Image 1 (tube, one colour):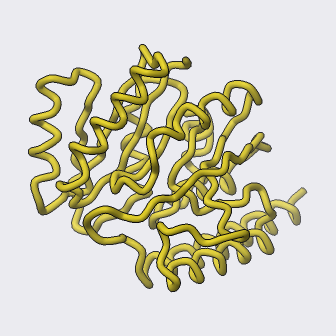
Image 2 (tube, one colour; image 1 turned 90 degrees about the vertical axis):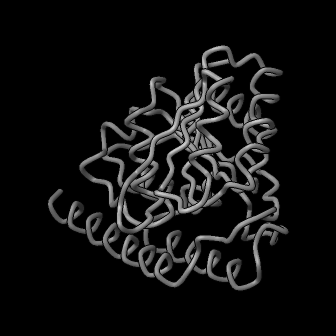
Length: 243
């Protein structure tokens, strides 16, 4: 298996961390990921999330903890910090709330390698069906945003709002100055801010229900997404006029 940096942005996930680390290590060892690291980027949690990770680090040298000290939480900024810390050229992003089953990592990686892709998206395939991981309001909000993205920015994946994907670190470093880096949907930012075409492949996944804690989706996140879409559309239109 390819060298892999797994970046997991977290906020107040004390009840999920130990379970997630155990599941991840089972999958990574079983599939022979010898060169690997798991980077937790804690967005200044107010519970015992960081303390739990520090205890787990004593027995697991592949675990890394980065704490982002900021007044307001922001998943995109946390991911960006994790990308900078990643030692390997292949980065996998997933949530820390157990909604992204680690068992799908091997499928994402295999499709990534087999297709020589730039990005492989763990797609929830929301335009076809609603899984148990989304409440009705969040589901309707998500598909509305996906339709807006597909209409204004082009349909590049069935799930541009996914938080479970693997990509080449080069995409981040090459396009850093173009990134919006606000809100909770870093995948769309990476895809639609790229200066060059990307080969994007989808891998359907089962999006599980949250086991503990609260979803970070709210009206502020939706507004940031709409601002991102408008910004990206205007930048693309400006680029066409220049060319």
